[in-house]
Image (cartoon, rainbow, N blue to C red; front, side, top):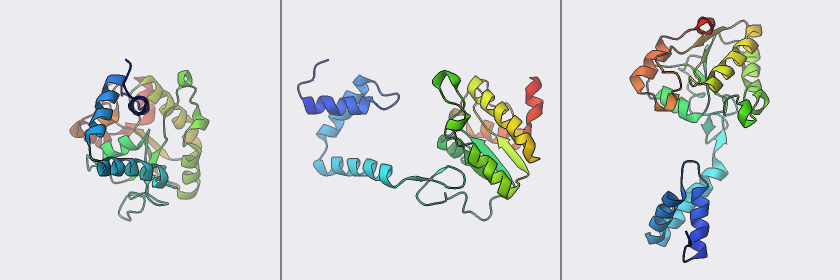
Length: 205
């Protein structure tokens, strides 16, 4: 589809580079921005630029933060003896929305996926082991998506965690096979967190 303006075309190409956004949707969004006042577009661009420049990753758990530590890690009332391991920020938000988990988190920043060229060294895994060396947490909750890649990552972590003498659990399978945590309803996810089971019990399923 040829567009009458190279500038519009460049904007469409930029928007279409985002995951899940096709060219038609990108054109619709670009035209919406084109109809807005310049100050609105400037504010939009400034917000995106500010996010890229200022958002950091928590030095403890890898969660997104505006400072060295995220808002969860700095809460003194959180249970320091439980770390819930998740894939990314969206899973933290999903679990937090249940209001049923009061421990800490560790964000991997992805999952092991050989097909995509993602191995353990590409993820935020070593820092989890470093935390355990210092904190000696009593329980690690593996809250990863119920997919082949999620299960592969969970098993890898389970084997590595054996040397740390900590309890390793997994969220209950109220989350269906193939489902992603971020799309699971709060009640189901909350119950899965509450009724977590020893990880080794999941290996026989």
